[in-house]
Image 1 (tube, one colour):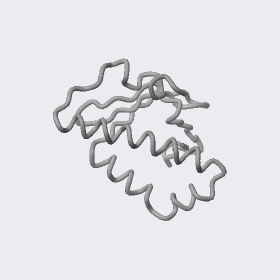
Image 2 (image 1 turned 90 degrees about the vertical axis):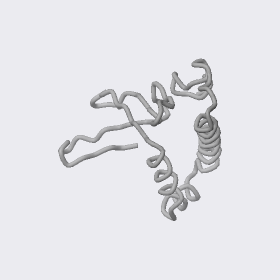
Image 3 (image 1 turned 120 degrees about the vertical axis):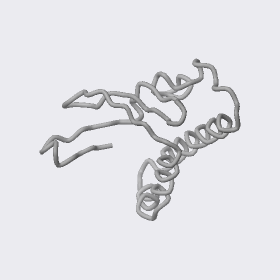
Image 4 (image 1 turned 135 degrees about the vertical axis):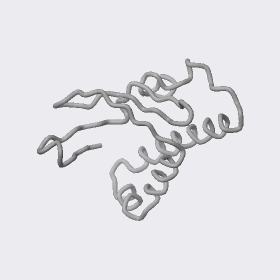
Length: 118
């Protein structure tokens, strides 16, 4: 993901969610932490509430992202990873909203990968 803002001038920030240092559900948000890539190596924290997650999923279902995925050389790998991640997220979120206890810390994503897998 490339982040840019007019306030940054010509500086472009590189942020790879796959290289995050952690992700957790911290009611009422999902919090994703990590470090930007070169040239800044700034720490970041993305806090998404329930509405943000729904809006992001709706955004990804628009024609342009779907066409992008269909035309991508890595579409099947991306699709499988995305569906798996979305499925885990949805199940855990529903479970927690229905009053279930949070899963043990060992199962939370603290390493930037799901259950220790890259």
